[in-house]
Image (cartoon, rainbow, N blue to C red; front, side, top):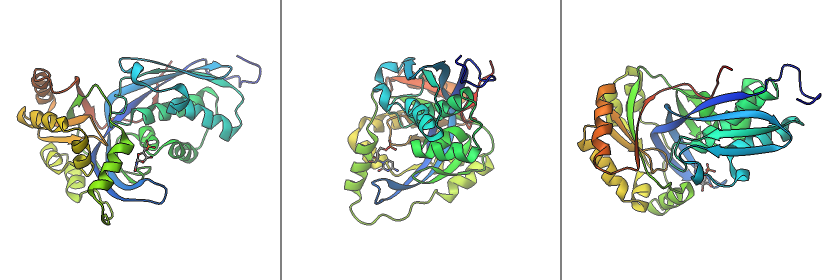
Length: 308
Ligand code: C5P
């Protein structure tokens, strides 16, 4: 520790952070800033990255975990950028070493990079004893990326704008998902560009389907499964037709709902209960339609500081 650090600064802060799936992703027209107007319903699910922050002279970041080699250069990493943003915005002089354990697929449509950004914000704020107001933390999160505020919030929420204007959504019960994870990511800008090619005229303002909101509030997985919606599906499918095989295999194996998450390629398959989710995962793993199959539940809380 240096003399400049506050006396109660911890020596190490560990934060766990979930990935998300979009139960609805409704897309409007492209805005002047190049982004599309969205109306989305996020659910945080139990597939977690972990970020550990320890004091250091500069800002550095290392990545471990199964998908670590797919992660891009450190300077582009949202965890690294979160630490740098806090330093510049708040005049912090300390550095940090961020150690990331990655489990959320990279470029998989589950906002793994945003999750790491949210976790790093929380970890650095605690390590540097910044005592930020909740509102300021969310503003910093939104300036890092549209999906970062939801990774802080977790649970279930409607996201408007680019997805950063959040309102918690009423949700009853626990949903059991099987994730079919591909071994290669998809480019979000490429999927949105294909969306524009497929929708050359004016696009109506996006709205989360009321049937989905009601099904979620009622805690009815069958109705939730029937109401899942993703306007990016035709674009994602046209860039990666094998996604259709995964969806069809999931439905054939008993999924009560099947959707590509975000801009893909992760496919989320809804099961009626925990036992059915295990059966579905076993069945899917024998069909070789995904690189990896994971059973997860949602909603779960957002980025959380772990004890110790
Ligand atoms: O959010 P992110 O910066 O990762 O988005 C990458 C690109 O995806 C954007 O530059 C834009 O081309 C496209 N995009 C979009 N509308 C959104 C989100 C992303 O057009 N709401």
